[in-house]
Length: 149
Image (cartoon, rainbow, N blue to C red; front, side):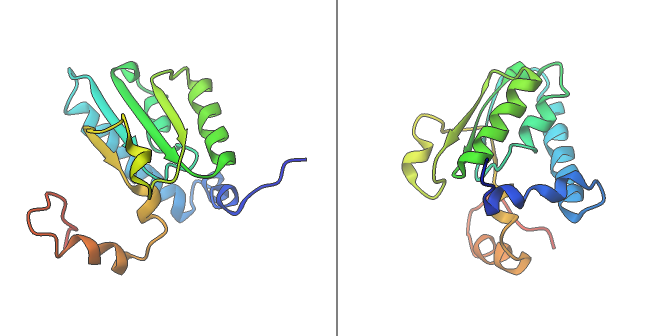
């Protein structure tokens, strides 16, 4: 018998295509697709922080003929989610994505995987209120990333 963690159960709403989580995933995937399409001739690196089961990056790459040009690392702390992400990558035939069980809050988790062309923090921001997401970004002078008004 396998024990399901809170973080594995958190992913259950993805099964309902009308859930807010599924709608958010589709939006994130659309942004990833657009970003990749704008860089169609480049080899790219990606990191997904608090990657969960890898639905965003693995989900996009699974449907792309050019998936092998993207080398990536998914950082996820929960072992069950790591297993699920690895299974999804394997099923999609994506061998250039490493799923690393690590605490994304530890600097050592990023050893050997930075710099990256794309850093996804969807898993981090998915667990923080909108107001709290805006707070750390807005006062950052010189930051390229801004929260849209």
